[in-house]
Length: 128
Length: 269
Image (cartoon, rainbow over all chains, first blue to last red; front, top):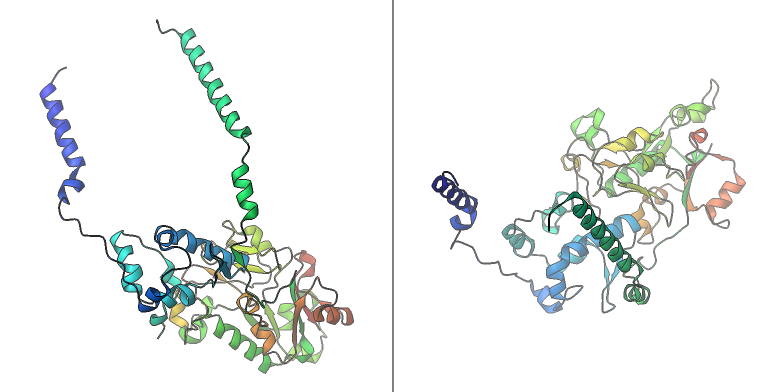
């Protein structure tokens, strides 16, 4: 192989640059945010589904809820254990989770998720 | 082994056979598990108890009982509860007007019925017009994202604002001018935000929704409620409903019947 030294050196430099985001941020990772529950949410102990499922799949559930109301006109959700909930972001979800900044935004900011719910929907405290 | 074209073609042929046979096996495997679980699972979504339901919602507007005061009242309450921005009144933006229900001249509402000697009442009184919730809605055919759709269970032509991309094909398709476009942020011109109905955003189309959110709570459309009996609503497919009785007794007409959109809003002239 001709110019072996130059090629290997070039490759090493290339991979170092490629891995820039990893070694640059090494050791400065911020810890995952803790969810802060309101007293009402703590008392309820359980969201409309199991907490683990809600943590993992609340976005899918919210999408299903949205389509159910906006397209089918079905406004009652029956959860796994048979409980019935009125489908409403501002009246049902935000009734318990009324601490949007500490409950929604904190995680969403951490994982750089930018849901567009609040472009139109009003968070109760923003009404006045 | 020497690589030759012959060997390559052989291997390629066997591979295709293998892939084909594999996918056939997957296809013929019975799917007992999924079928069984789908049948036994109870429905996860249902209507609110007490909701008003119909096979095809319709409305009759008795223009003999309409006057300017009722027209104004109907528009005010509709626009208030649906957070319809008042761009004309608040910002003077005539071209950006948004309207769900509004009064218009007889000669404009019924272009093809107008003539030299229409009655004085029709010349003087404006007629309330709104989305006709057509049985054959051209706006739905025009929408590329199915943001506007005809709801199967009750025939209402509704908007899913989450999906609207603002292409305005539906505005071009609607022969009744029932649709308006948010050329600017609606919140600029909403005097007092109604918390129970979500306002739209810049770049989406909006129109009358037959008060679907009120029907779901078991209430009549807001315009019907304040119309002092001039508006009657009900199920067009139920022969014993009030609206069908009214339609059987009076000769009612629809706007632009010749276009074949089959409006669900009828007018007694």
